[in-house]
Image (spheres, one colour):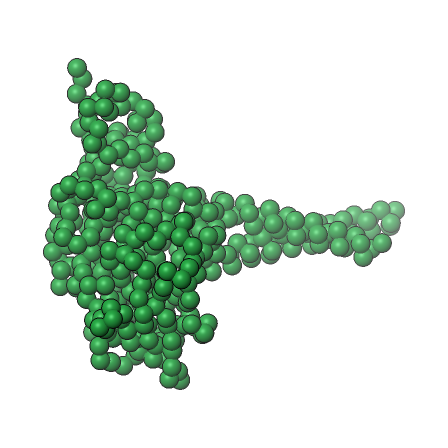
Length: 188
Length: 200
């Protein structure tokens, strides 16, 4: 009898352990002090494009940065309204990646997929998207609108330097990228 | 009287045991999965592993927890796919004191980069300031395949210095590639092989 009782306690411990495991995995993303957003917080401004320093063996903004790329970050906050992003295109490769507050890469596009000579995107919350007037959406069919799942997050621009000597030029190119409040739609 | 207090002691002891097991098992497994980088949907090709779903909104909870813990920004699937290798073809950990060769070809992509990091994702210091290669600067053989020598001492051709560190990882990133979540590991997707020799 005591043996089965001990086994019952152990079994209860294992089941409870499973619950602890699952809940801690689910809670961790919202309780992590060292996620990418928190790491980039001190070196970026809200709704402004900031060029990131190149990763070196001593320091890097986030781990596993690709040293062949120049990168710039726009840490956004959509509570004041939608955001507009303009990025130049290089001869080699440029990508724009959108991350939610918790680091989920919910959208990414590269220069070829974006087409044209500059990449132009608008970022808004699903609620702000709902407020975009219908006819405006039709007339501006070439507007690329992205919905952010969280009111805050990160837009990361990356420009490839196919050879290390081209890095300064790519960093210069990214300095021309802009991120800021989208112009308020004109009322008729 | 004594029998009653005995059963209370037994109950408390049992509860204590249950909670101890729950804490150790629950938090221990979470720690292991988060630090080891467990995620679903792994695509393994030889020594290389990629998690294409980690770069999408369909990322699984384990990969999310790992991202939050490490501070990594995953490569978005519209951008590319990152393959990581922690071992060579024979499952031996990559050792910076050995001479390693990465040889072959990559799946099709507009650009790719090969980068050497320490296991925590930092670049490895070396005298020539080289941390990786891009597909544009690599010297290829006549058949289009390439060979990268990864060793502590300088080598002719494509040389990637290890700085003599004990452990390192290689990351091969494919940019603008048709390779993605839907791709199955097959013969048409060839990845370069990794071999090590002259280990101390």
